[in-house]
Length: 203
Image (cartoon, rainbow, N blue to C red; front, side, top):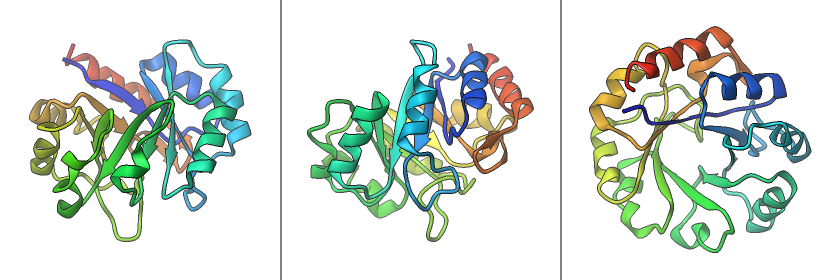
């Protein structure tokens, strides 16, 4: 069965609409100042207003203040927040939208059951980065997460490996970023199409 699919790192309406038409269930907008895929809330809001009604906009944050996150939720209309930094369990509570927390290291994953969240994402890790590195995650650790929360797999996914990874860990959803890019923040339509063609084989 095909997992729900989020394409992350949206910076243009053209890319967002193409990904939505190709089959994306969710689109990610990164509000982390050090990311090469960062987008201003006002620009994200404009893109989100143009999306089809059943495509979920997700805001990605890294160690951001609650005030900033709440302001972006209000300005943009994002319906899910993804906390991709070093957030603790209390940092994930009290929002008006669903919360996804990202886990990367064995130490973090060992604490996954402490978090009250809508879903947990495992991402590949590279020194000094908070996602978008193209590094595959540890799939054995992914299975540990799945015992406690709906599992989202991210990190290094592309058309050539997605079917094998999905069959291996059977995630609730996948998150693809660099695997469908021609450069950071710019999607490659051929790669997007190829990804969804492979995912169609899982239906």
